[in-house]
Structures are given as C-alpha cells and as structure tokens.
Image (cartoon, rainbow over all chains, first blue to last red; front, side):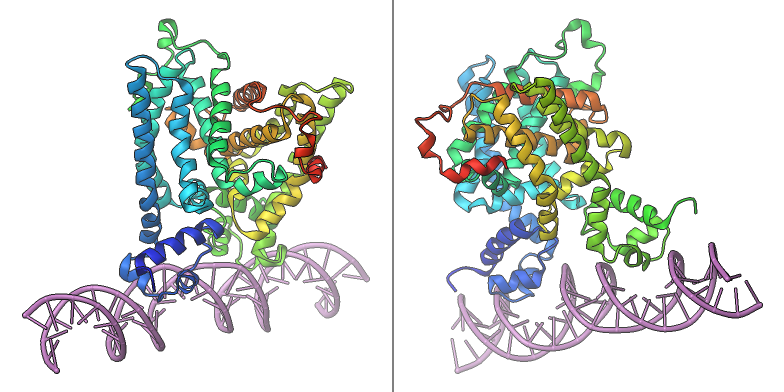
Length: 228
Length: 228
DNA sequence: GTACAATTTAAACATTCGTTTGAAACAAAC
DNA sequence: GTTTGTTTCAAACGAATGTTTAAATTGTAC
C-alpha cells in the first residue's frame, strides 16, 4: 500500500461524497472502495461526522486563506482607495474554482453539495468556516460599489455567490447543456467568465437610491454590523 | 380529519423534505408528523421514491407550463422580432419565485435542494421535466442576445440559473447575511432584482467574437441541436 | 528476541430504514 | 343486515446503517 490509511480514506471519501452525496455513501462502501477495514474510519477519525469535517478541513482552510490573502493584496494595491470590483470578485471566485485544478472536480462538487445540505452539523460548520470570510468581502464590496444601497449590494453579492456555487454543483450539466462548448474544467476561462459577468451585474445602475444620510434612519442601526 | 390522507402526506412531505432533505426524513417521521399510519404511504403512493416524484409533479408541471406560457406571450408580443431580454428572463424566473407566494418557502427550497441532489432517479426526473423547457429558453436567449457566441451565452445563462437556484436554496441565508434587508419573501422585489442583475450580466459586451460565418467551422455540427 | 504500543481485522451490536402483511375498521350498495 | 370494496392499523420482515469489541497483526524500541 503506497498510501497511509487516513489519507486513503480521505481521498476516497472526498470523491465518493462528491459523486453520490454524503448520506448515500455508507462506510462499508467507502472502506471497501478505499481498500481499508471498516473499523479504521472510527479508529482514525472517531465517527462518520468527524470524517466529513476532516474531508473539508483539508481543503477549506487553505481555500479561505487564499481568498483573504488575495483580498489583502487587492486592498493593499488600492492603497486606501476603493478596490477594483473585478479584483474583489476574482479573490472570491478564483481560489474556489482553482481547487478543482488540483483535486479534479470532486472537491468543488462536494463543496457545492455541502452548501445545500440541510444537516445541522453541516450548516454550523459552514457558518463557522465561511461566515467571517463573507464578512470581509461584504466590506470590500461596500467600498468597490459604494453607489449601491446595502440592500441592493446584498442582492447582487448573493447572486454572484449563487453563480459560483451553482457552477461548483452543476459543472457537468453546463457542459452537457452547452454540448461541450462551456467546459468548467478550463479553470481560467471559468474564472474570467464569472468575474466578467458578475462585475457587469454589480455595476448595473442602482434600482433604488443609495444609503445616503437622508435614508440612513430607514435602516435599523444593527444593520451596520453586517460587515463584522 | 379535515383533509384527505394523500394530501396530508403530500403537504407534510413537501415541508419536511424542504426542511431536512429527502434522505433525512424517514417515513416514520413523516407519517407521525402527518398524523397518518406508516403503511398509508405505500398504500397511496407505492413507495417513497414515488412519493418524492408525486410531491414534485403537483407543482412542477404547472410551474413549467406557466414559464412556457409567459415565453409564448413574450415571443408573440415581439412579433417575429427578437424578444426583450428582460421579458425572457422574467418568464424564466417569475413562475419559480412566485410559487413561494402560495406554498411558503417550502417548495422553492425543496426544488433547489432536489436540483443539487445526486440520487440518480432525481437527476433523471429533473432532466425529463426541465430539459425541454431549458431548450426553449436557450432558443429565446439566442434571439434576445444574438451578439454573444453560443459559448458565452451558455456561460451567462448558466450563471443566471445559478442565481435563481441559489436563491431558492439559500433564501434564509441571504436574509441573515443582509441582516433582514434583503427579503426573498418579497416576491416582486426578488424577481425584479434577479431580472435586472441577470440582464446586465447578459448585456455585458462579449469577451469573445460572436459565432459568425468565419468561426462556424470551429463549432462541431451537433452543437446546433442544443436548441431542440 | 522480547516487550510494548499502534494498527488492522473479522465479527457482532443495536438501530433504523423502506417495505410487506393480514386483520380490523369503515363506507356504500343492495 | 349482509355484502363488497376501500382504507387504516399494529406488527413484523429483511436489509442496511453507524458503531463497538476483542483478538490478531504489525511495527518499533530496547
């Protein structure tokens, strides 16, 4: 066996979870496919739930670290001024899409699936891992497109994340529907198409007036904490 | 009992599936919550799988019929000419979002979850139900934004659908992240924000040259069938 | 080579699942 | 009131699940 058992389990779990969903993969299927004993999952990880979060931790921490590093660089380059919208979007999209270059489409797909998974421990995990990162980006977008109201910026950021997550979940469908024309395996093109599309949506003229001093009191005070 | 047993089962199933996911809801939980006997699911529907598709058929057929009716009206109003992009987008989004007005957020959420569900019978069901509809819309977009290449139009339609599906799955998260500013329960506003955002993205200048005669041979011939 | 810890293994455990069964309860028709 | 067909019910079935156990194996240090 050329690989350590825990890694063998993690790799197989990542792949199978992405292909079939977490619930649909039993530990017996998983361990058989990985060529390890059934009990070794509990020996090395403690439980299936712990295995699921272990599969994620291996990737997510680096993913979000890269995002924040890119965002730091963007903000530094802007030197106190408002950052370029495309750069902020790229910092949000690129690390997520790029992981697929190393892992194949498996992790991307799993990540998208997990985001939609209703299980409580999964939701809590996601909130912990992605919440602070989303907060940082909310502030960045606030400065990149200040002409939008907080509400409208919220909508558009939501739509942008939606396009990203959907691309993670449904990359095969896109390739099928477009008869192979659009290939999410082409990472650079995927990123650029996404950044360009989202930037155009973000830059569309505001539908509603911005949050200037006159409208400020319409906004409940706790809404200010959205950027924390 | 004020309600027939099958309807009672369907209503409870729709709600619980949306809240917790299909796999996570056992028939025992479901029937207990619905106040009916465990065996009545099999008596009235035959199996859990059949129940799942029954839950969907009740809504999806009307949903896609409404979409196609709206699209028909839009194309008729355009009178042979290219339809207005915003109208095509609205025909795609509005019926889906509007279902939530009648059912609460449950069906929308379930629909989004199902779309991400990897189970094979679910995927096949979705392909049958939504495939032809997607085809019609692909043609409509072809005429609404002819300046884009098929490839780029494919990407942007994909992103637009992503924003829609994501809104279906994650409406509670949007409300939370925006501190209540963005409320997906406000159907009209949700639709308009989505249409406006997607139209701006679609109308952004093309990144690549359009499919004119010179480039046609780069495209494999079977790509023409994408609109069927 | 012996001793000790880490790991692997096969087997069993207790639940839970979707499904089936056969009798009971109910309704409507004659 | 009896009959007939539909619906409900409690109980059980077999299979699959995550988890635990305790013995067997392997690796490592002395």
